[in-house]
Length: 338
Image (cartoon, rainbow, N blue to C red; front, side, top):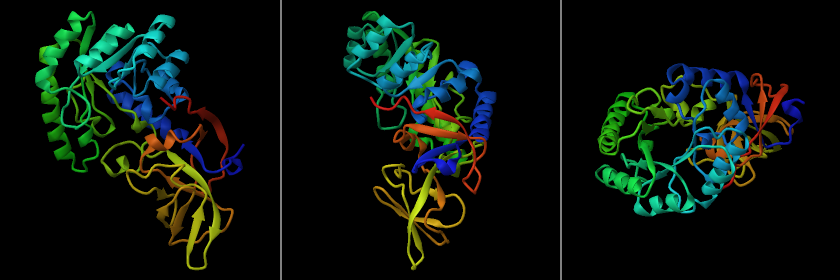
């Protein structure tokens, strides 16, 4: 099957770029120094490629991701890097499957939920500047003691400097990351444990404080990250078909907001032209020349929510501008949902 035979819109990925991105990250963050975040690609098939590269621990954002990873035999050491008050499904996994699952906690309530579900291991989640989950650094020691008294093993701390991931100024990104990690190290001194978990693709090199980096988007990258000085290439494309043209100079594609995410901006065209706007089922493009039936590629600005909209990624050896190349593998996106 060729890409030109696919029903559009469809996701295609460049295998050479995928392999190169994995190798680049693995060279700097080998083995357990990287805890790849499966929320970025939602696929156990891609996770298995990371296992082949030497990574056996993974980060998950949802319980559904945990369940899928365990079912695929990838439950050796999983971290739910999110708070949950509904941990009974995790407890069921621990009872029925051979796996190791650690969850993030940041309150007495999330500690109690972990205990009630039979979870044995936790990380204390610390707010290091991103106004999302996490306790204050000053609270970490208190929560750690409460967790231990409740019978939990506290493996260490977690803190995500997500507010710094896309800062285009590398010096400022490095400086601010160091400041955020000082807070996490302070918390770790009061908590103990072997694990300091955090970071992501944007701070993959400048964050030297963590013992394990929670990066995921680097495997296929996206338009927003590509603006930074990172050694990873964009490898994902939304394949679409021109379904209408106008004499006034624009064309309409059959993939829009329901096929890709624009929370980080509009997608970029592969080749000449520009995106005018996206609507539910369509993307309107201009400043080029297209014909009805022509295949057109769009580079997503944010791959994580884009991938979650699809059931498969079609892997090709190399994405060509002609968009007519052999599909070498179909990667099921089997970790969607909650």
